[in-house]
Every structure is written in structure tokens, then in C-alpha cells.
Image (cartoon, rainbow, N blue to C red; front, side, top):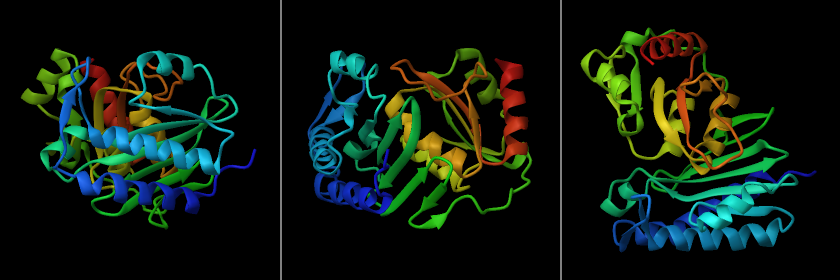
Length: 266
């Protein structure tokens, strides 16, 4: 199988985001879905546009978008052995609707149950993070895999932690006696993966992400040299609709220290 050209794919997603998302930024009507999450007109406009553009260039691949119905999610998650696009058209919708400039588009191509291409685009900063399995990861053409480890102790690291999806005991322990230097929570899981891959923060913990939240990001992180597991010690990536937890770090030694601390509390 010939994989899509990364330059063409980057340009396609960038054009869609700049034309569909940015004109609507902080100026959209919002709605609440049955699961309590926020959705806007921009989510649907972006998903429709990307689906159409992908079909023009690569009609052989199936398309799965976050804003599809639950019935279509269930059906498509079982398909796509020959190629399945997985799109989150607007990751960080609450930020987007509130005017907070931290959101992204996440697109992954799955082939035979593995992520072969991952792309996360930040239209505010015009930053495209992308990776191809076994080839590498890049930010706007610059390799993310050439940085030396920071050799940073956990006590001095910056952590990104999504508290609301963690078990109460673990969240309470992190609040009472955090092992890291400081903590953030930005609101776009896809960008979290990429900022971790780029070393903008150092350790990551999330209680539950969907396939479209992590599929592109985990390939970008691992191709950049980072590591990730679930709270149960399993591979994060899984072709399915259930949520997956994340324990991750960019530097291998820091990952082992961070994972050991989390497991001791869990």
C-alpha cells in the first residue's frame, strides 16, 4: 500500500483548519452532547470539509470522525483493515468556544490495526506535528527525534495532568503531595501528546481518552522517542471505542520514574 504524501496531507489539513476553524474562533454557537461534552458548528464544518477533501485524494480509505453518530462509530471501528482515517476535527472545543487559543485538529491513518501516519495541527500557532511509523516525527519539517534527554529529575519536571478523569485516591495524592515540580492542564489531548514530544513539558497523566484523542499523538510521541502505557500497564493504542488512560514521558529514564510513582499510588 502506498501511504499518503505527508506534505500533501499537511497542506490539506492546514487549509481546512484555516478556512473552517479560524473564522469561527470564539464566535460560534455551542451545544452539549449526551456525554456532557461541548460541540460547536465549527466541529461539524471542519469534519465535513476534511472528509470531503480526504475522499478526493484517497477514496480507498474509510473515514471515522468524532462527530459521527454512536452507531456509525461502532460500525466503523470494526472496519478499515485496508485503511481507516480517524479524525478529531476540533480537539479542545471548550477552549475554542471560550476564546482560549489552545485547540487542534488530529488525524491518524490506521492500516491493519496500526497507526501508520499521525498529524496534529495547531491553527493558532500554525504548527503541524506529524509522524510516520518507523520513519520519524517532525514539527513543521524539523525532526523531533534528535533532542538529547533532559536528564531532569521528576521533582523538577513540569507535568500535564487531567484530574477529572482520574480515580479519586490518585487525584487526591497528586493534589496533596505531587512528585513533580509544577502542573498544568491545557484542554487539548492531541496537542498534549505533541507538546510532550517536543519537550515543552515532561510527564503526562490522563484518565481516559478516545481513539481520536490519542491515535495521532501517540505515534508522534513514540517516533520522537517518548514512551506511554495505560494505568494498567498496557499499550495505550487499541482499535476500539473505549477510553484509554495514559502515563507518559518524553525521556525514557523519567518515564520509568514517573510510571513507578504512579503505579505505587494506583
